[in-house]
Amino acid sequence: MTEIIDGNAVASEIRDGLTDAIETLADAGTRPGLATVLMGDDPASQTYVNMKQRDCEEVGIDGTHVEIDGDAPASELYDAIEDLNDDPSVHGYIVQEPVPDHIDYREVLRRIDPAKDADAFHPENVGRLVAGQPRFKPCTPHGIQKLLEAYDVETEGADVTIIGRSNIVGKPMANLLMQKADGGNATVTVCHSRTEDLEAKTRTADIVIAASGVTELVDASMLADGAVVIDVGISRVDADNEKGYELVGDVDFESAKSKASAITPVPGGVGPMTRAMLLHNTVNAASAQQGIDVDLP
Ligand SMILES: NC(=O)C1=CN([C@@H]2O[C@H](COP(=O)(O)OP(=O)(O)OC[C@H]3O[C@@H](n4cnc5c(N)ncnc54)[C@H](OP(=O)(O)O)[C@@H]3O)[C@@H](O)[C@H]2O)C=CC1
Ligand SMILES: Nc1nc(=O)c2c([nH]1)NC[C@@H]1CN(c3ccc(C(=O)N[C@@H](CCC(=O)O)C(=O)O)cc3)C=[N+]21
Image (cartoon, rainbow, N blue to C red; front, side, top):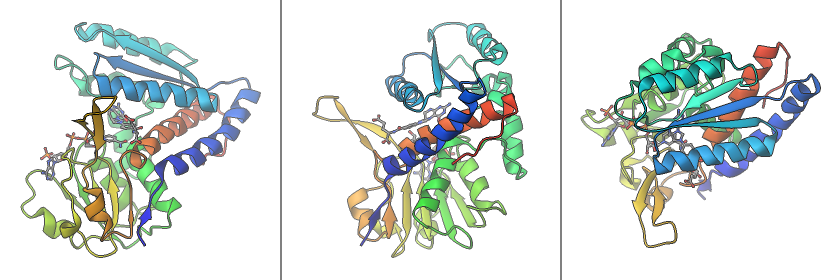
């Protein structure tokens, strides 16, 4: 039997685990605050940001949202970042990707106060992660670690193939899995668009993590029997339904399911975990900034 990994359920457990910590902070006079910054009007980003704000409400985090016109100069975004850095009621925030073409995202990240960097994308936090001393873990890879743990998938000694080397998913995922730490100790192969023989790299893997943005790139023919398959990809594909689109992952689910021992669906797999770990980082940031110890899930 192939196990369907339920990201909504594990994310809900994480949110439950956070409410205790949030209460402890509230008792000490601090309500954790998360801000989302969105520049431009990318429809998928709008959806994610709305969902993140709803999550905040559910667990008792103070959510605020900053919207900046897509045509505004970079200075407007920089000013908003400075305000958030200076605002003691905001403990964590993120600047949603993608930003408009005239904005240099790397410069944006450098301006974020590393102590409030809920995505863990600031160079200082990236460096700390690589050095094995993370302050925050990036949300998507951290969420995947939690999913593997929840389903008793052993990473120690496992051969893991990651498809994708982006700064937000592939690279930090590789780093977490190779660390000499719980949830790590794996042997990691990172593939990308120049990889010569992708199938040869996936077919020998105990765990395949697909984060390419190429719809249904991975099918059963590329998998070992009993592989664990984690589908990070989320693409909107035109569809004849109410929304006008459906979400499609990087994995051909029905095909891969025939070989996999466990597999994440899209939606309902990695996506909800990304959002849960953003709340986690926000509570962690609030706790550090206020000097109040809390137990985190
Ligand atoms: N579920 C969630 O929470 C999240 C989902 N996502 C989704 O995950 C996907 C990836 O996102 P992101 O990392 O930001 O994307 P990027 O576009 O930044 O990176 C994609 C990576 O995949 C590689 N790639 C592209 N095509 C192929 C191919 N045919 N074979 C092998 N490798 C390939 C690229 O290689 P190269 O470097 O050579 O260009 C690149 O490294 C997207 O669908 C995105 O929407 C993203 C973040 C969170
Ligand atoms: N600075 C920054 N940080 C990010 O973490 C970040 C980003 N930019 N840009 C875009 C990607 C993508 N991402 C997702 C988050 C949640 C879902 C999610 O909740 N998905 C649900 C459904 C979503 C829906 O219904 O549309 C699911 O898969 O079940 C998906 C994708 C975060 N990202």
